[in-house]
Image 1: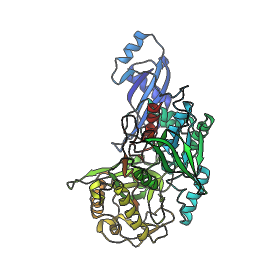
Image 2: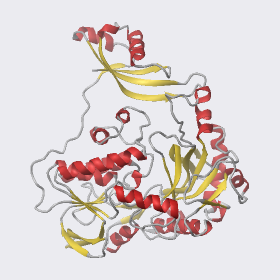
Image 3: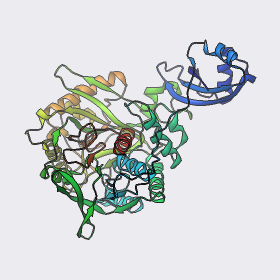
Image 4: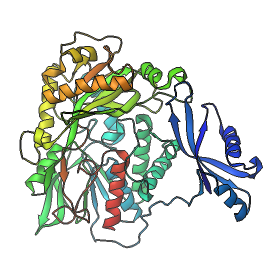
Length: 530
């Protein structure tokens, strides 16, 4: 197999056209090309008058080794080895007791899958409901403003990522673990293009299918899901985990004996963080980010990014990623950008408003949205307590709830008014997509002054990079506080916490920042555990 990089092609070029380009680039006769497959695909939109795709292509050729070596002499061409995917096929047991995975987000799902493949019959505890029931509760909250604290955007099968765009971009190294994650997602129903796109996404609609298919596979391999079973407490003897206490939906608590617990509870399991602190688990404060969701017409984003190629069927909805740094040592950036999506209510506690973003695979809705965030550090939290960042989040969410009218409507403001520090009285051309609805106000009334001022500076700078970003009618909806976990649960080189047998994992524990990195963390812990 030979990989050819940096193949540029117009948007309408198909595989036959790519074959011709490869032939011209390498001097290789077309009939010598046995097969051609896309390995990577990205958009080059730097020149708005000539937007193109850029490919890395894997091909097999007819010919002996001497002939192939002449092809390899060309720039951007080399021979590749078969992709390696981590395996968890073991026949031995590590304990007489079944391992327990707490949480079924990406980290918990993939930890459960790895343990099941190893024949260890894991028990997966999920405080929320299975996805079909969870979706009904989430829809009811969005339509009627009635929150269920154990079944919402944060809690339930698939974790918080289920109600997102399903973005799979990651800054971690591409290796046998990331390959395992992507291939398992495809086997479970994700589009095959996630294996090669530079900015792959699954979409909320497809994620619902994927999550349930992974559950079926785990169960077929001997694993067990226990929905509406919340981790209540740890059972520890002489510094060693010997079991957990589990609370069922009816309030009854039972003991579950185990000596291996993978703790993949996500970034919003605040009652669990408090329980861990009471048990003496070593926790430290961690930086994260806060801000609001910014919403534009998707058509404006398409035009700004692709020029005359806006709305080309091969491109789909355009995205963006922006960042700014200022002399006051504050920075702002866009996060979790959802093309053709919507802003969603993501609260998990009563009396608090939280926003997030979501897109379906088609990304076909009217608006684009992204979090506009400012970094906050432990010095901003107002105390030394290990959970002080969590309390800082709660304070902002409670203020947003009050300003929104105390019925889960979210406070919102037009960008033009935000820049002038004056309240908004209603919408302009952009219709806010957040349900149960918004109340227009001045976000300066709830955001810390340094966050508010940094966001104002950032809007002006980002507009220089993406024309129209600071348009008067764009809408800011607050608050976004769950960008990442506010804590880090300390663990050693074997991934264990200071209680032996407890393995903090994923985004909630402070070791990941998205679907892929969380899933990989779960796989790596299982590899070490095995």
